[in-house]
Every structure is written in C-alpha cells, then in structure tokens.
Image (tube, rainbow, N blue to C red; front, side, top):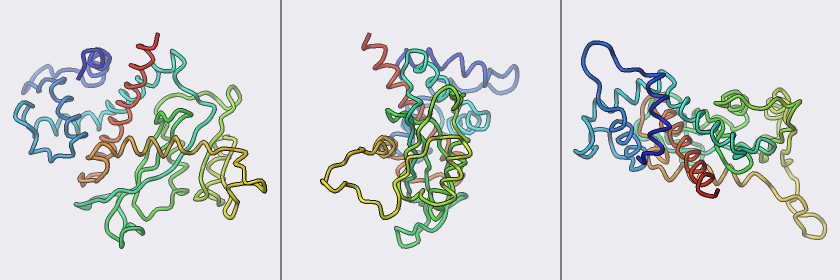
Length: 265
C-alpha cells in the first residue's frame, strides 16, 4: 500500500476502530489492510495468505470487524468526497446495472443462476456516476431481477449527494428496467429517466445512433471490479463479507482517480 493512501486511511481507522485500551493487542492495521487487499485481488483462501502477512485468522477477524463497524464504507465515502472537492465527481449523469457471479460455497443472498443451469449464484447491483466512479452497491440472489434491486441500490449511496432541485440528475438504464418496478424506483428518487424501451430500435431510419448510450460506464466499472478475483467468483458464505470486499474494491477505484487528479495538476 502506498504511503499516500495509508495517510488518508489511518485517521479513519483511528476514528472508527480505535485501539483497544486493554486485552489482547491487535495486529498492525496497515499490515492487515495489505493482506485484505491481497486477498481481494488474488482470490486466495484466507488461510493461504503468504507468510509475510499477519496471521490469517487475525486478518479475517479484522476484516469482519471493520465491515461490521462500517469502516470500509467510510473509507469509500471519504475518497469520493476527496475527489468531489477537486471536481472529480459528475452527479449529472448516472447509470446502474447488475452482474452475476458464481457462489461456489453457497451462503446467504444467493439464488439459482438462470444463465448457468440454476447453479448457486449472486448478483451485484451497482450505481456509478458519469465517469464510472461507483456510488452504491447492493447484492442479492442471482435469480432476482435487476429492477427489484434498483431502489435499494439508489438508497445505498455512501455519500450525501446533491438534491435534485439543485442538480438535475439523469439515470441511464437498459431494457431490464423498462417496467413499473424500475420506473417507480427512478421516479421515487426524482431522477430524470433514460430507459431504453423494450422493442426500441438502436438506430433511427438513417441507421444513425443519434443518442449514444451512457450506460457503458457502469458495464466498464463492473469489468474493473471483476479483475478482483475475490469478487469475480464469490467464495464468501456470508453476504456481508462479500459486500465488504466489493466496498473496498470501490474505494480503491476512487483512490486511483484521486491519484490521477493530483498528478495531472
């Protein structure tokens, strides 16, 4: 972990997970975070962490404690806010979509995957801003329709976002949301909907795409998250552990943007 990132995260860890005043001494927080990121990126089992990291059981306990206290969500939110301070967040155009993953060991929040012979799977529903920065994520069973997760996704934004009266916010969705459930969720949160209608042609009569879709950014972000092998295939039996890994991956995407914005000056 680069020193710059650690300097951003250490105050948050001290605030939301302060050191114990008595009892058994905890492992080094930076070393634990390094191990969790390695687990996230490699997809290895917790008990297969390399020897240079702390004890795997201690790392896993630390990860679960941080997720239960909301530390990972706070890290994610803090990095979004840092980007927003330098104009790195575009709230005007947003998009949402879902992606399915295999769930090898079962657990909660899973369901039969309709695209994989009804094998156990899980679904990630993601909301991003105009440039693909993740704003919210929820998970559910693979057999849950995307539109049924949309309202929960819009309510799960980790930072305070501008009010619709101050900033017009457009939401781009694919044909899977062209139904009353999807439209009700969009209207409830006062977005300007851009939902491709079922049966609508992509091109006009002149075979021109007059209004290019803005949904591709969410698909790209889902692809970025899938580069983390612990997200691509779900090995966590407990849904909140899997969700915690996704939150950490989203935070790292925002740190990457913060770094690019700082070096571009």
